[in-house]
Amino acid sequence: MSRLQVYSASGAAAGDVEIPDALLEFKRGGQAVHDVVVAMLAGRRAGTADTLAKGEVAGSNKKPWRQKGTGRARAGLRQSPVWRGGGVAFGPHPRSYRQKVNRKVARLAFRRAFSEKVAGSEVRVLEELSVAEPRTRLFQALLKALGIDGRALFVVAKVERNVALACRNIPGVELVAAADVNPYQLLRYPAIIVTKPALECIQARLGGGAGGAA
Image (cartoon, rainbow, N blue to C red; front, side):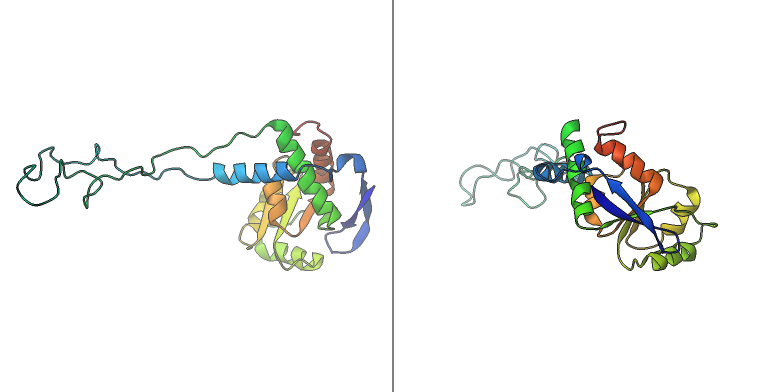
């Protein structure tokens, strides 16, 4: 069993919770984490870079000068890649960088990434995450109470409007639903704050239940 410390909104210790060892994975999954993160970052690429080939450059097909007798290198058309303003040889064109990741690989990557965070004591459980008003200062007060002065990922069962508005202007802080959190987000942040209801959802994902795909 792995124990996670539970805190109240005031930063006071409020007991602990246990995560069965059967839900954690340490023996395998390292390559799966790498593959999933690479696929996610590749999928974010716009892939909109585009250059004109010589057949797409506007211009006449007339020879710049006659083939022989000028003393100059022979030239067929001004759209040639060897000319300034001509086409680009083997240049980029719009494409998709998306990579396929199997569901089992994604689930394994999530289990391994979360397990590593648990083993590194980087996961804390919060009884409840709520703010009375959508004010940044209220969320900053919560960060101070929890002793967080760097980057942190807050995982909740359901994203509430007030909480989302209160934390969106704070650098290095991200809010995500437990059903949507992925291995890349877990790896990015040194502090993972999970609410109790969100932890139940994560345990269901670790067990391969509903929402098991990372």
